[in-house]
Image 1: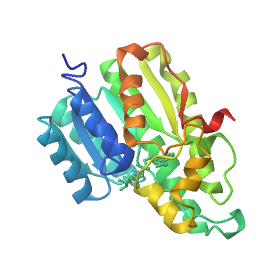
Image 2 (image 1 turned 120 degrees about the horizontal axis):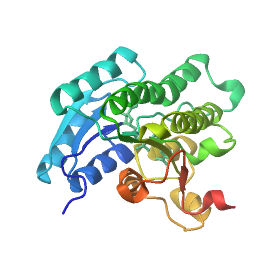
Image 3 (image 1 turned 60 degrees about the horizontal axis):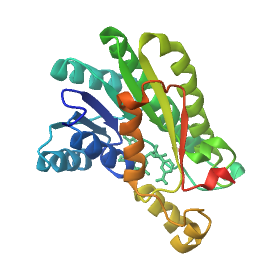
Image 4 (image 1 turned 90 degrees about the vertical axis):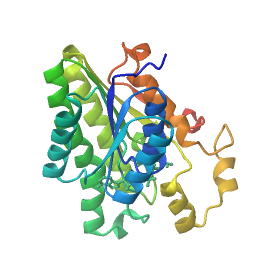
Length: 252
Ligand code: NAD
């Protein structure tokens, strides 16, 4: 029996990488999936992959940094499915890789708008619906870069620290309303975002892997599996948690 039959999940950033793997993982467990993202072709591709698995999905094009678009997306979900059981807020960008003094102001604004304001806007409308139905689980994708300083990615790092703080604050606010809210902090995961880091820095994969205790780059499914588990009843006593999934890097 698939555990999420009859459940409805929204995944932002669902057109690639961690968001796509998470969309597929929920579909395999029987959930109806709303695949959201900025680029129509990519989210439709994920929708079709779910269809090929025999699952049900719709694609909604929305920019998470624009309040009206997030609000409209939530309205579409409720009109279509009547509820939202789970949400994984994975949409994000890496921002410019440069020392703090060289980061352009518009890059700061864009990175914070998508990575931090975007998560807040999504939670705002997701929580409103979850309050109406009396239950829900949200998982926000932060990063191990949000746990401390990251040279050449100060703004990205700050945005991901902000996601942890938003997650913990909201978890405390809604714990008594049967809404659980957790954050996942991935380490290096093989996605288009990481490929860009390899290309822009010239750091090779083998050098990267040599610094990871488990000695491999993570797979998007490593994160997807943790997200579906956090949404499951097996995690029913977990809220405000920051789950690090990084092959051991942060343990040092
Ligand atoms: P990715 O680039 O493959 O996925 C990010 C997705 O977000 C893309 O599909 C993109 O179109 C979408 N997106 C970007 N801006 C958006 C916006 N304004 N509105 C809607 N969608 C938007 O990269 P990924 O690695 O899968 O990243 C997913 C999340 O994981 C991000 O939040 C990222 O910061 C985080 N993360 C990734 C890694 C890693 O090593 N890959 C590590 C730690 C954290």
